[in-house]
Amino acid sequence: MHFTAQGDTGVGSGARKVLDVIAQIKPQLNLGLGDYTYKAGIEQQFCDLVADKLGAGFPYEVVTGNHESDGHEGDIANIVKCLPNRLPGLQGEYGTQWYVDVPEQDPVVRIVMVSPGIDFRGGNPLDYSRGSERWRWTAEALDGAKSRNIPWTVVGMHAPCFSLGNYGCQPGEEFTNMLIEKKVDLVLTGHDHVYQRTHQLGLSGDCPALVPASFSTQCLADTDDTMVQGAGTVFVGVGIGGVGHYNVHDDDPEVGYFASWSGKNRNATLGTLDVRAGRDSLTARLVPAEGYSHTDAFEIRRK
Image (cartoon, rainbow, N blue to C red; front, side):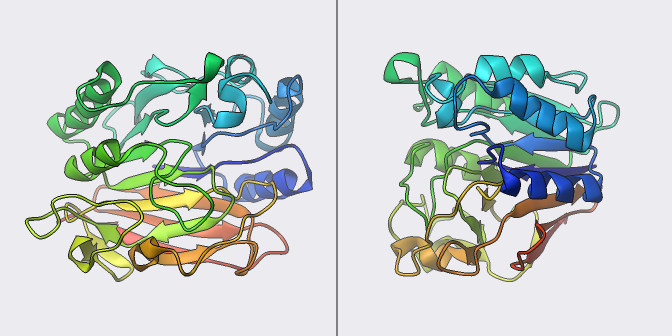
C-alpha cells in the first residue's frame, strides 16, 4: 500500500509544487490533513487544482482542518462534495470522522481520520473526551484493526498534540495517550506549518502517560530511524502542503521527543510524506518540493 499525506495546502504556487511532487510519486491515494483553501467560496478552485494535477478520479481523501470546519475560510461540506470519497468500504462521516481498510481485499493498513480539538460552527468542538461517543468510536476502530489482523494502523487528524511550532495539545492529552496505548503505528497531523517527526514514543511503568509541554526520557521507546512495531507510536507533523511556514522552537520542552524538524527558521521545506506499507515493514520519507531540500526517512518493522 502506497500513500502520501500533508496538510495546510492553499491554492498558491507552493500548493502547485507539492501537488506536482505527489503526481511524480504516483501514490495510490493521498491523505489531506486539513486547511485547504484559507478562503471561503473557492473550494471548487481547490478541487479543480487537485484534479488537474492528480487526475479527476484520484482518491484525495480529506479530513477537516480548523479553517473550513466552521465555514469562516472555506466549508468542509463543499470540499467533501467536490473531493468525494473514492475508497470502497469507508465507515463513518467522510470529512470529519471515518476509517477505511486499504486495500479493501486483504488490507495492510487501517486509516482512521478524526477531528479532536477542532471548532465547528458556533465555536463548538466535537467531544473526544475520555468515554465519549467519539472516543469510543476511535478506540473501537483501532481495536477492530487488531482483531482483523490488519498489519498497520495509521491515524490522521489536523491538530497535533506534541509540536515544536506554535500550538499546544489541541487534541487533548488523554486522547493522545489513548492512541499510544492502542499502539497506533503512525499519527499524521498538520496545523503547524512545519515538518516535525518524533522518535517512537511508548508507555510503560516508567512512563504511564506523556504529558504535553514536558519531556521524559522514559517515554522514548526507540530513538533511531529503524524501529520495531509495538514499542510505541511515531507522530509526524506535515503542515507543509503549500502555504507559508512557522518557526520551529528548538528550546521547546518537548524537543527531546523529536528526531527531525524544519520550519521558517530551520531549513524551511514544502513537500509531502511518502508512506509505503507492506506485510513486514512500514517506511516513510519526506519528499521536498522543487526548490526545497530538507529530507527525513524512517522505518517500522514488524516483529
